[in-house]
Image (cartoon, rainbow, N blue to C red; front, side, top):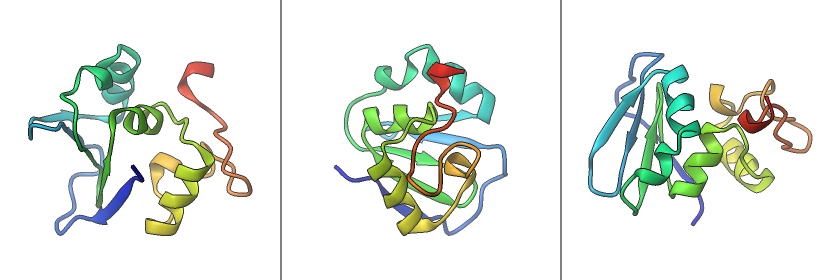
Length: 112
């Protein structure tokens, strides 16, 4: 499944992140909380199905492994370039985290 992006009709506060699982349950995080939740395996405790990740002005529909890579700053090159094509640069995949030339993950959480 490819990650699908859409712009939100109403922007959320800058530091608010939401993850909606396959049953519609919504979890709310700040950027530090979501990383700690993901490191602790939280992504794989979500109910299976289409997962929605919401940030300031966009929403990504993805599966659990894709969300795990997004939060761990370890998107595949294909995922990185797909997001760039769909919505452009956003904080989650900007040039400090990914090489704009080849899409390589520069700071994956596991390697910090």
